[in-house]
Length: 284
Image (cartoon, rainbow, N blue to C red; front, top):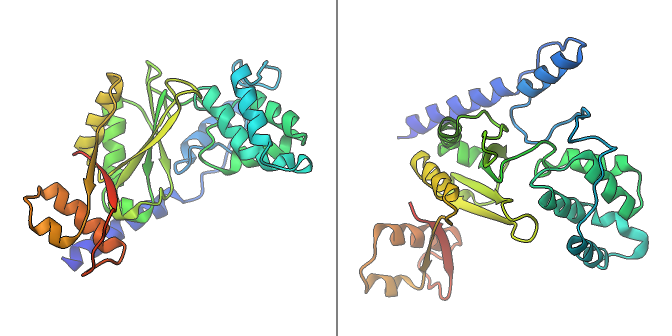
């Protein structure tokens, strides 16, 4: 058993090393530079360069909606007037929600004007955090966790299943504009690896949601995609953990026992009573 795990870990490590190898020399032509950068960036949704286009340039008009301007005022109210720049992250997040999941440079300029800083200060933040998308994404943006626990548990196979099913490459958008697939580092739920996140931009900033789906399999993520395509919400499995004594007195499914074991032992409660705790696991 140990040797199998060791071989799998070594295989995953080799994949990481290959993906992090330096990109080949770039030919100094705009088209070649764009193509090379796109193929060499395999581990982040964020881009480290900007090229003007008809739908993404500084001359494009962009401003917050009237409803979102009220939210802007509310966000700014949390900071002293001489520290408006501290609101840059929540304002960029709101702008991204309004713009269908990605940030054009005009939106960044609008944020810079509101918090009264040079635009480059906003660009620095938007290009640093991979959760800010600087190219178009689907109405449902699927992010696969690529950190070691999820990788060992099969996240690469999950990503491959999604890309094959949707007929796209990483960070590409399906022809109908509904889906895109990206990669994200550590979602903070390693006990339930592997997992994906679904950012739902179908209803703009008013109905935006960001949902975790844990303990997924290649088959399960395809089912999630098809449910989203139909406008349905993939179900969650909810269980009351309670105490071990209580659980032994009732008939439980394998899924419920898995839920209890993971959360009972993960929180160091072995041999004790866990009262009032709840866990969320997606139905498989």
